[in-house]
Amino acid sequence: MSRRPYVRPITSEWIFRHPRYVRYMVREFSCLFIGGWTVLMVWGLKQLAEGPAAWAAFLELLRSPAGIAFQLLTLAFAAYHSVTWFNLTPKALPLQVGEDFVPDWVIAGAHFAGWAVVSLLILAWAL
Amino acid sequence: MARSGKPLVWGPFAAGGTLTAFLTPVLVVLTLLQPSGLAYESMQALAGHWLAKLGFAAVIGLSLWSAAHRLRITLYDLGLRADTLVAALLYAATLACTGAAIYYLLKI
Image (tube, rainbow over all chains, first blue to last red; front, side, top):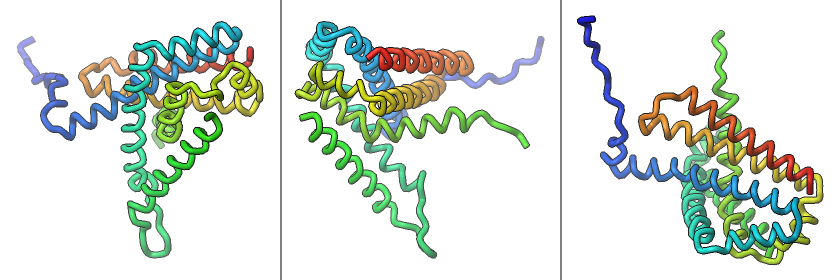
């Protein structure tokens, strides 16, 4: 075939063209840590079902240096996900009262306040 | 009218994204600190209740789905264009993990 159509090259270097793209990718990569940590919790359920010794081994795994490092990274990425997610809520859930739209900061602020309340309630239950 | 399967994968993504935004940070703090609430007896008592089982299964399933969906989109952004294969693998892994979680929950 003599026809040579233009094939757009597919690259991933665009990520580094602008800090905004890097921040976008950091947000997207949070899924690896949230997903990985959740799979770890499924493993925890298996250990919990098997008995006290298996559960103790699971808690010990979480206390190992690698376990702590992974959880700290997960905590940082998960918090970043939360902040970006709640900051987007005014776009996802615009709320109209009468003629006017509720200001963005009220909608996002309500979510941040809810986040704080939920976190404190769970901490109060467990601690 | 053209029908789209998109709401089917986007709905759980939005639900899971919201759940992880509210819950994951504080839950990771708990697994880091390992307070008395994480002791074997209290976890058995908690996971022994059917309502908690339901909650665990829903949170795990939706969290995994939103992570898998986001990973799918990210891999596409990074230049991996085998989207059908990626989507099938990731969603299948999500369903398998959720199934495993439900199995273990029922054993507790």
